[in-house]
Length: 232
View 1 (spheres, one colour):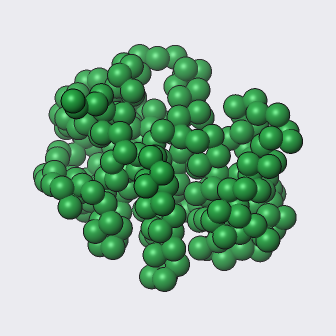
View 2 (tube, rainbow, N blue to C red):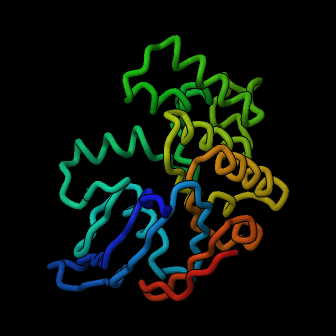
């Protein structure tokens, strides 16, 4: 029996209004239909400006569609209040970005703790889990280091640990290997694949053929429309 998708987009359009009087319309997504099944590893590919990051933001409740519906675990989130969307993001979605987005004044441990602080987890429990996650990504001995004291690959591993802090159902990664050398990128890919094997649904925007090859399904975007949707 087919399970309910973890996230589903139904005839979704995203239009940005730009310019001094907001009269210029840019159609980032045009009538996109997409269902992401639980446990999938999805790679989203396409040229720059094709709508990949916009798609990821809508899947993760970081933004709302201009038209159409977004369903998260069967719930229509299109018109939810910002506070309700924030709860979904914090408790059920993990994010990994190309630029790491770590807080420079916080240690690796402090960065991984943040989502758990927002979720109201007790201090002792969150410190234990943050240390456990850093050990899992190979940074147990670097917990007290600031981001400026870590390499790019180490910073990205901290970001992955942070994304997994609240045991998300969905992990979204936007070009997670884009700023890394080949070998370091493979290490990051290994961590994403490991999370997927443990049951986390993973969707990755990427130009990296190795990342795409590791995914179970490849989705192509061009000019805001789905241009290809194939099992790997």
